[in-house]
Image 1 (cartoon, rainbow, N blue to C red):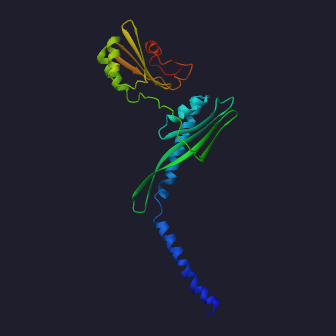
Image 2: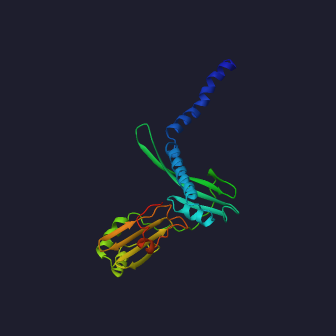
Length: 247
């Protein structure tokens, strides 16, 4: 048999195992090949929300950046360097877990999580963000989650309405709501009206006033709760500002 003819016969036989292996890999490839992109997109949306909060809240201190980022679900703060935005600049590395899903040809949905790390460089001259950076080794920084007042409005109004305009009864009624101990509570009486202020964090504030006609609740807007603006106090609940949006 001539060399050229022999090569034409041997080459396909030699390559056959690799071709079979390639076909099997494609058929049995890990589910992450299906949900990977969706999970990365989910992680990126979380990073976008954090970045928007940094800008909206006009943060500048490293501790505030880290605390704000840590409040997002599925986010861990891995490192923080610097002190303030305009002096040293602040750099944060966040580990975000994205959740995704993808559908196979038979309609079956595969779900999975993907961890993506993001580096935020904040100041001193400009802000930037790097996506998909290497995640630093080590445990996340121990940053406490803020309590929340979500879903409390209706319960608070009903509870205070039943208590009536009596500060002692109102205090007892609020104690019975089972709030997180970290929620700050403030009460004040002016004439026949009792003011109540509950604050879980800078922008999570629920005010109420109770008089003979019943109870009213109000949540000041994000803009109104910015530092230096409307305080989340029982005095505000009793003031003429209660129930009014930003002017």
